[in-house]
Length: 412
Image 1: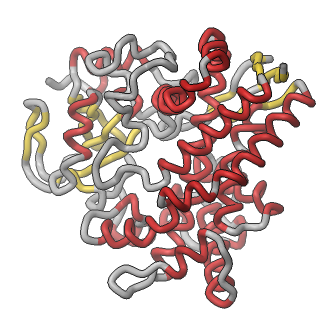
Image 2: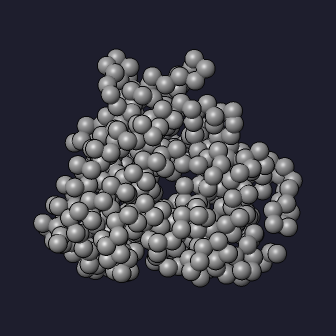
Image 3: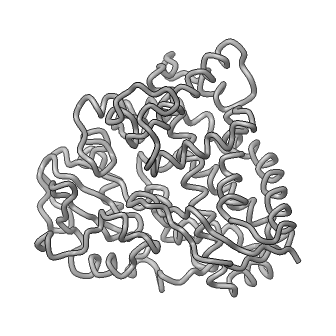
């Protein structure tokens, strides 16, 4: 089942994703080597590329741990893991505790309460973009919508939104940012993404917690401050990591879904026409956008025991990397998977939010609501897009991001 790592395409190379998901590479893996042995920084890992195999991994956290080795490709020291660990990098019972502390902020009632402000923001962004005519989609629509929503519901002042966008961008690519930026004195290897922006987010979250402890408000930070599990609140360490995850995941992933979704509508204008003629398809369109975009390309797990996956022996402590960007285009699960089709049935469900299992994305309801509201407002305003130049993609093997997207926008 294995191939010499020197004779194959390096699926960990960010350059491979310079034009988006390399579908041909992953299709070949699914066909010939679905549990493929590959290497990153000299150490082997198993690349899981088929839908059903990925689901098997996500639904068996006792065998495939998120805590042991954590969830990113690089191997970390114990000191690094202890400094960086968030809810994403935990197993039960710790994961259950953190999830239940975070859940009050994302109940269906809470998310419904966020819809009005989301609609106001989406309406304003789309009408402004249409008035300007020529815009960068990322700067004008897909970046400001989720970050303005998340800062609004967190309770962050709107004037700080651009600063949080910058920090979120630097988590993915901190090239040129000095190690001591934002007053950071922590060694970079002890910060998430090895980015000084993580220090900035930690400090910002810490200050907000102190302020909301003294002066509670009707916002998400206060909800997190007041949340209790078995009588215990979030520790300072858990709070700062939860705040960090909320800003990053609440901004970066939804932004990426929106950017790639708009690109898909530009490339498939018949689907935009269909959306406008049949707005009842909006819920379907939300799921297809998320599947097609697959904002997070992969996550890592580590085997806790000797086992077998699809006939391949997996040894204890082996790295097992699940590729959402492959599973969401598995031909055995999705008919004509490379086609962007807003009439596509929502079963089987995409795995862009981590598939069903204990680590299914806590903020998925919020992301779905934001995209749905944006589509509803696009339909109301009759928004049309036309690409006006080359797209610049994020230099990353982890997120399917778009950094710049020149386009013409009109309302009709």
